[in-house]
Structures are given as C-alpha cells and as structure tokens.
Length: 319
Image 1 (cartoon, helix red, strand yellow):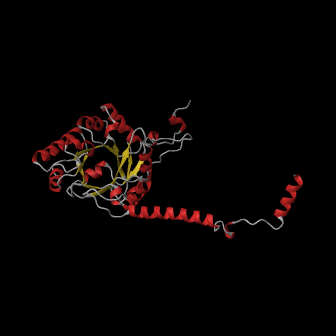
Image 2 (cartoon, one colour):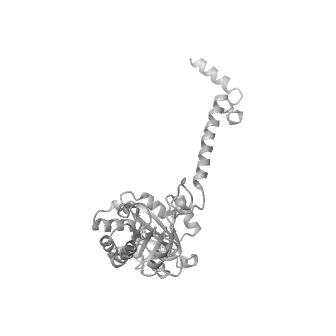
Image 3 (spheres, rainbow, N blue to C red):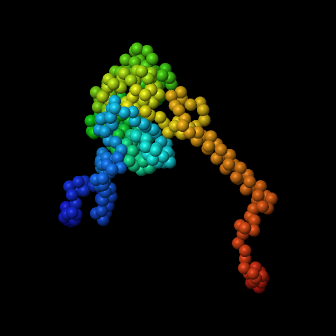
C-alpha cells in the first residue's frame, strides 16, 4: 500500500494533519487567508478542526480591562443563530458528554463565535473523567470548557491544553454551602473567601472565571486583582464580560424573574398569543367540519363529466 505522501503528494505539511474524506479531499478545508476582512481569526480547535472565530483565548486575554464584552447562553439553534447574527461576543452552551447532540447543533449554528462548553457538575466524578470530558467537548468544537470544578480538576484539565473557565461567587448547584440562592460576598469573610477562591483557580491554570451574584463594587476590585478574564452574571459591570442567559434577554418565561436579569423582549407573551391562536384555529376547523363549511367547493377535485356514471356502470357490471 502506498504511503499517504505518495497518494497525496500535493498536500502541504498543514494539510497532512487535516481530516480527509475517503477520496482524499479535505473534510475541513483550511480557512481563507482573508478571514480577517470579516473580523475573524483563523484557528484550529483542539479537536483538529480548522475554524474561524471572532476571538481566541489570547484575544480575550488581551482585551482584559480594556473593554466589556457580551455573552449569552442559547438553548436552541434559533437563539444561537440570532446571537451570532446580532454580534454577541462569546457564547456558552450546556454540554453533556453522554448526550452531546444539542451542544454540537448549537456549535454548528454559530460557527464563528467563541463558545465555551459548560459541563454539568455531576457529569464528572474523577480527575481522569474531567480530562476525558474536556477532550470530548473540544472534539465537539468547543473553544474551552467551564464547570464548577475545584482546583484539582481544573489543574488536570488545563495541563493538557484545554482552556478552562472556573465559577466563583454564587454557584447555584453548591448554594447549600452559602445559604441558598442569594448574594454571596456581603461580609468580609465571604469577600476574602471569593478572592482566595479566584486565586486558587488562577494558580490551577484557569484562564477565566464566571463570577455570579456578588456585590458590584467587590467584582470591580477582584477583576483588577486577577489575570483571569472575569465574566459577570448578577455582579455588576466591573468584569471583563457581561453574561446573561438567552432566556432572560428574550423573556422566554413568565415572571418572577431573577433580580439581576433584564428582559429585552417578551417572547413568553408572544408564545402565549401564538398558542391561543393555535387553539382557536383547531376549534374553527372543528366547527367548520361539523357545520359542513369545510371542505367547500374550492377545496375539492371535480370528476370529469361522465366519469362517475362510467365508474358505476363498470362496478355494477363486474358485480
């Protein structure tokens, strides 16, 4: 059997590392060199796929303290498409290593936006499992991963080259330790605890940290005392990224709303109105059928003249 170099002598060293179709054509072509004209950066994911992204980790690190970017978490393909079209800077998506289809679909729907895959806390039980889940996320197209892991897991995952975002402040899944779903960091001990926690993430190799529901003035001071890129949700404007769930931005649900959220649309009301229209449409259909109004002459196929008489004669004769 000929070697790959003999079969495809035209391939460059970079192309030899590409994923190839059976016929030898690139399954994932090298991005055009003029991607920068669209404000995109050429890159390759840890999973080996060429890609173009609005940001890389390095770009986001370089913007720390210079700009406040926007971030959301879409839950549907439509939301992901809309977020990228609108120009949201970074995205997060929930990722289940055992059921990755939803995250992969959202990744494909917003192919040019920096995207962090968020791995559920209970999906990983060991350090090795954390590394495996991180690799699975990167294979699926993630630009980095996030979880409520401790420093040990973060260190192991970051050591193999996976960008890891940590989570500090109010961590809803761990809120029993901080008194429930309420603000954290309103006492000196709590504020110092968050500071030490962020430092431990930094030392473990994280590149960013989501900080949730702490005093706005505290985040401002924390953000300028860490090299980590800080993503604020319910923690004011003192971070490097402002994060809000798509379902909150779009008003997908009925009140009450979390205090730190703002609804820019009311899709819940629109959906209720659409549902009422669906019910009314079905009811009108039922009434129309029962009253003989449907189907009407305009909905029918008319038999050609004489066809029915010929049909009856044929049926009667055959009987």
